[in-house]
Length: 82
Image (cartoon, rainbow, N blue to C red; front, side, top):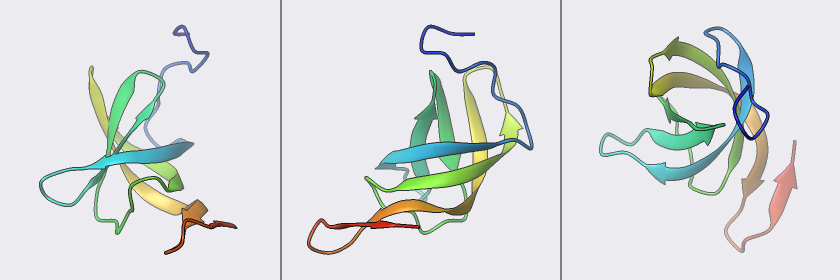
């Protein structure tokens, strides 16, 4: 395990992820532990939390797909719980 308590990220597993940035191609970017995760083919918004399924893991980054939204920010900054 790494220093924040998340063990190795595994392909096919589902994790909670907060999108902190957007990539040049529109993918969401967040972290699971210390691993950078790119969320493909999703209309993610910065600041929202998503449940993602990891599709491919490399040594320093991973790719994932959205399984569902956990918490979304709406226009006035309010949060919706799902």
